[in-house]
Length: 625
Image 1 (cartoon, rainbow, N blue to C red):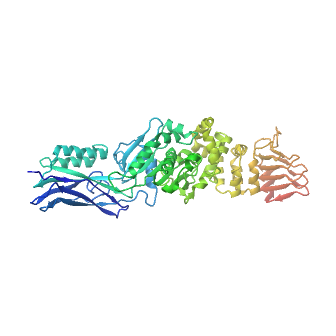
Image 2 (tube, helix red, strand yellow):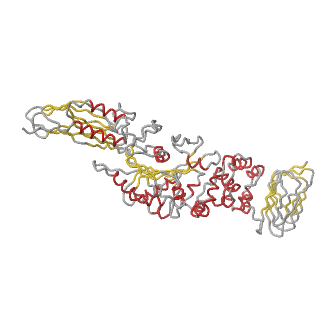
Image 3 (cartoon, helix red, strand yellow):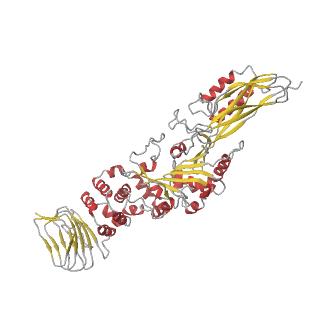
């Protein structure tokens, strides 16, 4: 007599994005031949990576069922329907999940099958809905990334048949099922694994077999999360002349392309995905390299970077924007890293800003969407503000700068004073920062910039005064500062709090004059006096008091005084401009002809002010005591 064998087939289903979405996954239970009598078999669902609301802490993926299926005489196939549920899309209304993946998940070492919700026994980010499919770890270049997928698996077990046989051996089925669970979970420590063991142990006295049900969620496309700078190899690739991260990308391009193609079109289902890619810092540059290359062969979902630099112009230009859903770059307004690189791939950028004083490492690493990064403990600043999405064309301009940001201004001021005025000039624009990065001789300079204690420097009185004043400057002030050369940064870095306080009242003409600060050998001299015994005219020296003496050319003097005995002498020649802030003691002498005096709050204490015919006083508030 021929055995009538019962079997159950694997099944899969694709559910639309959204927690309100439902679908039915259908398992086929079959008899090998028709029977003249009624045949029954019991069935039950068993949780795997897909949970039933009772096992594990994630939201349920399917509705568990238990029952008995009956084959009428002559029937050879029956269907078991299980309801499955959709989940919230990974990119629903915010990029917070991408920031979690880019700033935390990417920086951890994972095993295949691990649930990224579980971090040291906790779930700091809740139910992310992803597991590790692949962990990329290239020891040659230092490249590391984690490939995540959201497909979930559960099982339908059939047992205790009547008038038919299940021919698989019980122990063999137990081994097969536990192996699937171990592979799915990346080990034997999950609650689902232990529950399965208990259920299977209860089936030892009966024949049984199982099928696997796979749920594909359209709202959770696969994600590649790329790690940023985390080793000396990473630092080396940051200075790659072919573009930041180029060595790591080129050495792993084939493997990354193969993985993206594989998970875009799962072999066991009629479903396709557009994978997302995300990364922070160097990981953001690598994200752009990968997206640019893959966009020529396949479609992608969202490309999201955080505090990333640009890549090479050639790399960015090869990106096919038509092949992706969206590109967003999150930039922080003091982060020098994002001023490096020749070009960002096409899309939009969002500029984050807050007034708190410069801290270049904090601004580079802190979150801009999520409240806190579990791995680093860094938090989102309370005073953070963000721009609306802006065209990346602005970001790619070689003249792109964070100015007029007060934080960035005092950062440059601190660099001028603690590293060099030349460094301050070089850090203003994308083009100059990228030139600095590409020059291997500047590495010690960049290390010195990184090693400055910006918290200590920011607390100094003159920097605090500059910071306060910068929040009130006009466009004319910022236009002038953008044109400051190293000489100007050298002079400004030595200004006293009193001088910074007066800058809030300076006219556009005064600010325009500051462009030539420190250029004492030029035909037009700009000389800044203070309460020290500094020479203030061209090549002259050894003055015991601060003095301004005009020459035979048209001179422009910017003068700030705090009450010392000072003398201004203007020779009889045309068009001198004298700019004075503060109280003035003793003698203030102006020669003949048409010299212009821009004076603010001059107090002549016990002295005299002599004005010859033809001189002009502008915007003057004067008193005599």
